[in-house]
Image 1: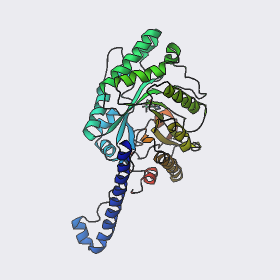
Image 2: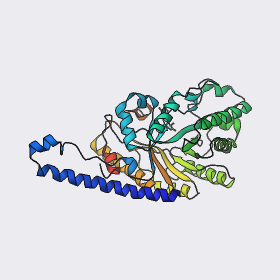
Image 3: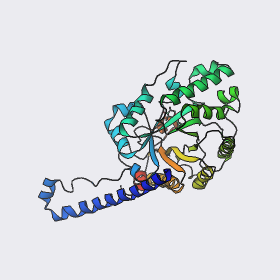
Image 4: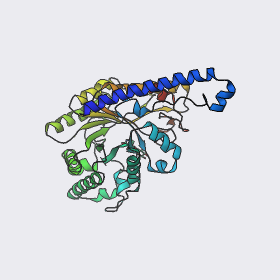
Amino acid sequence: MLRALRNHGRLGRLCAVLTASAGLLTLQTAPALATPDTAEASGVGAQAPARTPLKDLTDNYVGSAVAASALGNEGDYRSVLTDEFSSVTAENAMKWSVLEPNRGQYDWSGADAIMDYARQNGKSVRGHTLVWHKQHPSWLNNLSASELRSAVKNHITTVVNRYEGEIRAWDVVNEVFDSNGIRRDSIFQRKLGDGWIADAFRWAHQADPSAKLYINDYNTGWVNDKSNAIYDLVRSLRQQGVPIHGVGFQTHLSIDYSFPGGYQSNLQRFADLGVDVAITEADVRMTLPATDSKLTTQADYYERLWNACEAISRCVEFTTWGYTDRHSWVPNTFEGQGAACLFDESLNPKPAYNRINPTA
Ligand code: XIL
C-alpha cells in the first residue's frame, strides 16, 4: 500500500515537472508575439515562471526545522516554508527543557503552535527529541536513579501522548554515542544503565503505536566507530523486538571538510537492517564570507545528499536544519561560519536550491 502511494508520488512528480516545463514554453513564446505595450498591459512575461516546489519533486518528506517565533512573526518565512516543504521539525520547542523547565510545570506554547501550523497546512511533523543529554531541565540532575527512570518514562509518555497520531516520526534518543562508539556519559547512561534506550523506545511505542521511532545522531554519514555502534545497537534492538523503526542522520556538514565518503552505501547498510533512514538536520556550512565558488561547492554537497536519499528506497525524508540563512543555528554555534541553508536571508533560493530543483 505504502509502496503504491510512493509510486503514485513519483508519477505526480513527473507530471508536476512536465507541467512546469510546459508553462515555461508558453511564457517564453508569448512575449515575442505581443508588442511591448500589450505585453506590459496584459502582464504577459511580467512574472517568472513558477518553479515546482521541493516537496513536489519527490515522494519523500521534505522538511525544515522551524522556530515557533519565526513561524508566528514572519509572514514571508511562513509562506515560503508552506510552499516548499511537506514536513516540519521543531528546532527547539519540543525539547525537554522547553516543555518542562520546572518539574510538573509544562509550557506547550511553542510545540502547540507548530502543531497548529502543521494541521492547518497539511504538514507532516517530525518530533524532536525525547531524550538528549543537552537541553534537558536541570532538575533532572538531582534525581535518584529510580526517580530519573520514572521521570524519563513520564516525560516520554506525556509528550508522545499529547500528539498521538499526529507526529509521523519521533527522534526518541539523540546523540547517545560518542565519537569512539562508546555510550555517551550522560545522566541517563550513568544512572539508568544500558537498558534505558530500549525502555525509551518501548515507552514511546506504548504512547503512540503509529509513530515511527528513530535513533538520531551526527557524524554518522560514513563508516566510523560511532555509526558502527549505532548499527550494532539497532540490529540488536531489532533482534530483541524493541520497537525501533528508523535511523536519523543529522548531516551537519561543512565544505571545509570533504563530503562523507560512501554516504549512500552507509545509509543503505542501515536500511538493509529493515529500518527506514532519514536525513534529519542537513545543513552545509562554510567559512564566511560566502563566495560563488564556496556556494558552488555547497551546491555539490546538497545535491549529493538529495540524490543519496532519492536512490535509497527506504530513505523517507530529507529535512534541513532551517531553510534560510536568516534563521540558522550555524553562526551562533560555529564561529566565523554560516550561509549553510538552501535559501539566503531574503528567502531567495541559493545555488544549492537551484541544483536540487531542476525547475528552478
Ligand atoms: C540546536 C538548535 O538549532 C539551537 O537553536 C539550540 O540552541 C541548540 O540546538 N543537533 C540536534 C539539534 O539534534 O537539536 C540541535 O539544535 C543541533 C544539533
